[in-house]
Structure formats: structure tokens, C-alpha cells
Image: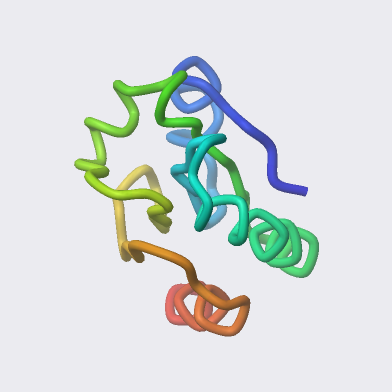
Length: 104
């Protein structure tokens, strides 16, 4: 299950994770973000070896700035705290899993 995180969880969990991490930058008012939410849940449930987290850009603008998020939804894949790949806009489950599989 994907869970929403803030700056503290980002520092304590995401940066220290030994797993791949997929961050979904979203906002509650964003239509495409709402469409992407169930896809992110499916990806999280089907990829237990990947940490899947959500960051609300309105509640955590410092994280959005850190990754230069200019449009939402934006997905960022990390390994060892470093960004590997980014996708802007809606993505299908297959597209997201393809992005992840390149780095497993």
C-alpha cells in the first residue's frame, strides 16, 4: 500500500531505504492525480520490494522544490536517495512497472 509521507518520513525512511523508492507527487485537487491514485495502489500492492510513497505538494512544497516538480502528477524513482527516472503526467500500470523493472 502506498502511504502519504512528509519531510520527516522522507528523511528518516526514503533516503535510508535499501529498496527502490517510487514517489508520487500529487495534489488533492488534481484530476490526473486522482486518476493515477488507484494505479499507484496496484503498483504498490504488486511490488512489495519497492517502497511506494505519496507526497502532497501543497503540504510538502519543500520536497516538490527538491525534485523540481513543476507539474503534477510527477513520479520519481529513487535508489540510495538518488533519482533514477522521472515521469510527468498520468501513467499506466505497465508504464510504471516498466520504469521500475529497469532498475530491479
